[in-house]
Length: 355
Image (cartoon, rainbow, N blue to C red; front, side):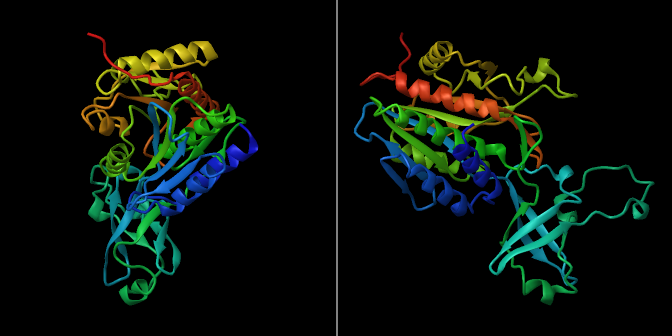
C-alpha cells in the first residue's frame, strides 16, 4: 500500500465517528477525495459523495459506511456515575473493563466502564453477561454536580482501542467496520482517475448511520439515482476457533475480497466482477447472502424501482468488537477489483436479468 493511502486509512481509523456523529471523519474523506474527484459534496445529514466524470453513462455508485459502533450518555446518578445506551450492535459482554472517550462539549473526557473486582462478586451466582442498565462509566467525579460540569446526557462515547499493525500485513482496529469500505471506494476512484476519464459516471459515497438501520445509504441512493450500486463492507472471516463453516460458510482472512450470492446481489454485476477478477488475477472468495443482517446494498436494491446492486466484502475477524482484524492486502485487492470493474463498464451499459 502506498504511503499516502496508508496515512488516509490510519486517519479514518483513529478519528471517532459513532453513528449520528460522523462529521469529523467525513471531513477527512472529503479532503482526500478532492485530490482526484471532479466534485465532492455532502447533504443535510452529512452523507458524502465524490464524483468522477459526472456526465458519463451509466451512473455507477460505490458505497461504504463511515459510522462506527459506540455508546451514548443516558443518565448521571447522584454519585457521579454515568449510565449509557449503545449506538448500534455493541456486544454487551465485551464492554466491562474498557476505557472510553466521552465526546463532551468541552472536549474528550476519559472514563472507564466499571468492572467490580472478582473478589467482591457473588460467587454463588452463575456468571453471565450484564444487562445494559447495570453497566456504568466512572470518570472519577465525586458526585453528580462535578460529573455534570464535564459530561451531559446525549454525549457520544467511543472506545479507546486504536489502530495497530500486528505484522507487516495484518492490522487491528476498533472500527474497520466500516472504515474499510469508505477507504476502498475512494481508493478505487483514485485508481480509476489515474487511468484517465472512465466511460461511466463514478460516484463514491460515504454513508452515515448504517449501524442504526442503513439510513444514509437510503439517502444516497435516492440522491445519486445510480444504474448500478456496489456496497463495500466487511464480512465475517470464519477461520478462527469456534466457528462452524457448516453454519456460517468459509471465508478466510488473506484470501481476497468476498462476493455474496443471492437476494440483493445482481447476477449481471456478479458476472462482471468475476470476469474482471480473472482478467486482473485478483483472488476472491464466494459466500451466500447473510441471514443475520444486511449491508447498505440491502437498502439500495429495492429503491428507485429496483437498483442493480451487490455487496463486495473484506474478510474481518472479530466483527463488532474493539479488536477487529484485517489483512491489508485484502483491502488493497478489493479496491483494485472495483477499479477494474468500473474501467470495464461500457458506455450506456445496463445491468439486467435476461428472461
